[in-house]
Length: 188
Image 1 (cartoon, helix red, strand yellow):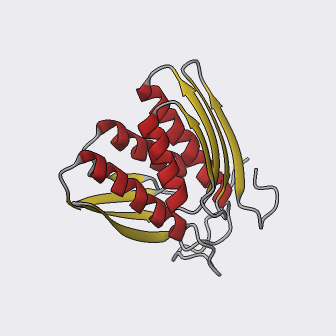
Image 2 (tube, helix red, strand yellow):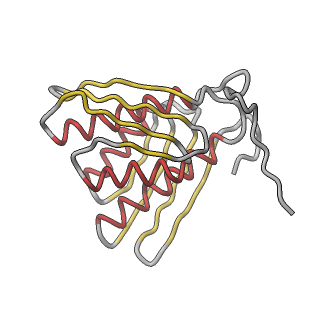
């Protein structure tokens, strides 16, 4: 939906037999979030990700089971972030270190268009969430748990750090940060 090069917004709907997810995203926002997701922990993590990445997000998501809902929300968010960022030069690489009580987590991202993940998360569903988000965003994402025992604190610190890193990586830059310059795709 990137209708104007200066506007970094997207509007995405993903609908399957199992889920319906609607996202409106402005990556140049202030962290304003409207979130209608029935799964309370997923809602909390999506709100955390949006606020810490300083985006404005409106999301509505319904699904048959938690696994489908978590996966499809991640896929839709990944696509929304990617489309909103567009082709303008960005900082691209960022890292954030976030404490939450006894947990200390570092997340590093590269919005390079080469998806790869290495994740340390104690919850398989949220490992799946971050992996699905990164694949659709076409980002490299690494998470490292430096310390922590409480799974909730580790997952939440990861989402905070991911949000902070995304916010910084999406920041506008004067030129493309790459030895390749910009990549151009061609075809028939």
